[in-house]
Length: 80
Image (tube, one colour):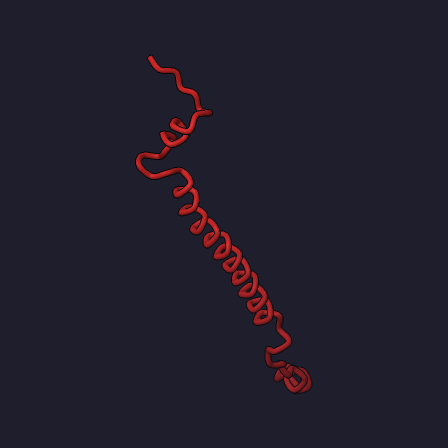
């Protein structure tokens, strides 16, 4: 049996994920993680903007004003 000594250069080359070196796997995995973080930040910002726009729609200052003065001033048929 052979002992595994991780300090030698030959053993460092054998520490691979299949046939692909671990440094290459780490480099390839960095880009998707960064893209995911940036897209999650953009999505959160878009959701916050949509929420602010919907708040403006339902705020009510842009709704038409209903004029009830004529209806309350007109005599009802029950009153003489």
